[in-house]
Image (cartoon, rainbow, N blue to C red; front, side, top):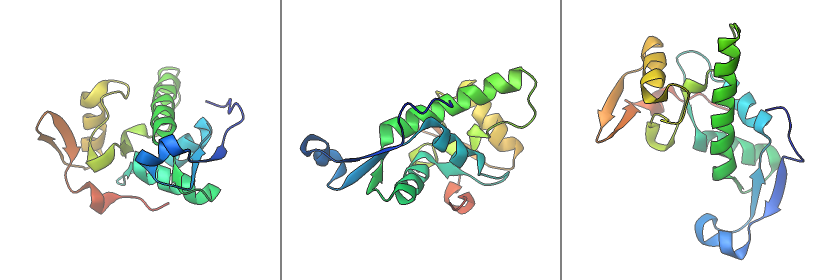
Length: 146
């Protein structure tokens, strides 16, 4: 988590990437930066990976935040938090408050969707099944500003 390996980096969006992301620059964040944004979300509030990407882009003066690395680093932050909890830490990154696009729960977080659902419901959010997925109902009303 703390080994940033030369990140964050802001790079020009290549022609190949531009088909998906448009033109401009992309910030590839450091893992600790993603964790820091996730830690800022207070009880009762939520964020999404996309909101974190927007905040990272703004922080670094880039056009966009990298969707792939931001998602991977949120996964790393979540698993590091659970590891800390298992070692007895009381204050960990509240990863369950970070949702996927559209308010979807993240099946790759520790304990899967069931664990994230339980955490969110304990904090007063209504989680509903939508097709095969679970989403936080009206999640937009609970988004934390960055």
